[in-house]
Length: 162
Image (tube, rainbow, N blue to C red; front, side, top):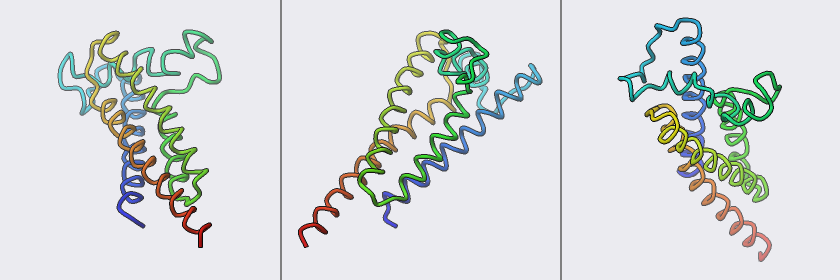
């Protein structure tokens, strides 16, 4: 296992851990409104405000369009756990097709990250350290997965030529 693959595994595991922490913060705050998360530093730096906002479920889009009771209205953090698990599984492959699928998923996550950063800065006007950590992880994963995909294509071409 190379450094790139190790980095992908490490970042995916970090993404899973951060997503589980976000789920914990959301549940704890809903059960106890006085709960203060580790990432709640002041009025502006407050992940619990962000993680309990309407944008924390279905990316703020599903509930607005399809309603709160829609079966596709999962918390963003729950989707994050599944996303990072899928990326982790795909990244273990040497198949260029599976690595391309991982790259495309990662590219989509970066698109959602841009949208969610907009929501943080413009709509909610909050700083969410947990959220920004996942956005950085998403960007790093995209770069690492794209690099790994290019290497898998080169290796496949070398095998065909031999």
